[in-house]
Amino acid sequence: MRILHILCLIVITYIVSSCRKDFKEITTVDVVFQLEFPDNYIPGSVPQDITIQLKNNITGDVKTMTSDADGRVAASVLPGTYSLIASKSYSAEEALLLTGYEQESFVNANVTPVVITENKSVNVKLSGSKTGDLVIREYYYSGVPSAYFYDLFIEIYNNSNQSIRVDSLYMGNTKTASAAAYGFIGDNQDSVYLSHVWMVPYEGQARYLEPGESLVLAMDGINHKSDPNGNPNSPVNLGPGVADYETYWPYTNRDTDEPDVPNLIHAYASGTAGFDWLPGVAGCGLVIFNSANFEELPVRREPGVTSATLYKAVPVTDIIDGVETVGSAAITAASKRLPIMIDAGMITVGANYSGKSVRRKVKSVINGRTIFVDTNNSSNDFEVNNSPSPRKWN
Ligand SMILES: [Ca+2]
Ligand SMILES: [Ca+2]
Ligand SMILES: [Ca+2]
Image 1: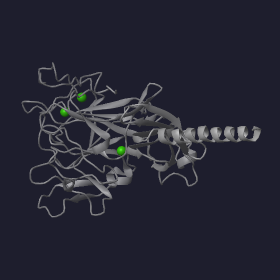
Image 2: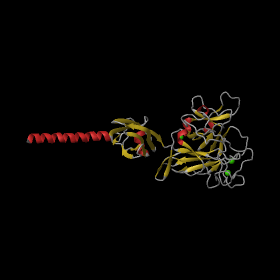
Image 3: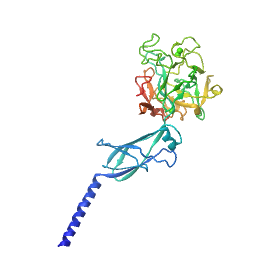
Image 4: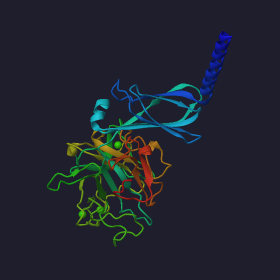
């Protein structure tokens, strides 16, 4: 009897424990996410302490987890369809050990859908980007009705964690878009061909932009909303205190020279007709760069074109940042004027005289300082701003 009793107990225990096992298998499955750094990270670096958010697309529940010392995240989840977001930012010191570059960096991933119906392992490839030094934060070029476009501005932002000297910084534009032609790229995409170049003047002392500060360059440094020379349709005040510099066109004596907004130096002009710098309401390729030998850089005619216009050839290695703006969504990549290395994509406000600008998307805010996305692809990095707004960062 005693042996039978023990046997019964064993059988019951087995049934209960196997029931438990079955119950567990039906309700949850085990998933392991194996994170991988971008290919350009130092081999052997492990993506640990990276925050993962796993969202159940049906219930909306979000699990927040962190990768372990092997770059893995293990979880038991209900079978279903999920979305995964991973992200981590690195200080310059941390990034140096991972990438070899002492510059604030980010990795992230955004994977959806992740279908999890059984125990499985999922590889998650992280993409990375360095925080650029100076970036073009906003470019307003489209003008407003009726055909008013003197309220153009460019905002250049210090996206890094160190102060950057900006006197002698160059800003230039490619050929203005026209119905006939958009412009050209060098045979090897090794240079940018610029029709006009402006330079921030040296005003007796070095000028620095601190992290999170910006420089606003205006076509005309006036309050366009209220100035008698302005237009009430304009969305922007670019007067003294807002614009740091303006483009002044001295050749034809028709440009306004606002005395309290210093003038940029016109470092290269493919022509001096007209009455102001006119990069075009249909967009242009816009770049900022430094150059140790600007005067010696070659000039070149556009291949296969009879026009005698000469463009300044600036090596892509000198370019700090650039954005390719075009007139409408109908423009194709065949019309690109900036090499892929500088801007792999293009962005548009949609229409001339729309009163809209393009601006870089916010990546994150660290200790109150805004960091903008810069993957050298304006199709992803930029968005349309319906209310052009210098120095409005989030
Ligand atoms: Ca002007
Ligand atoms: Ca002025
Ligand atoms: Ca860039």
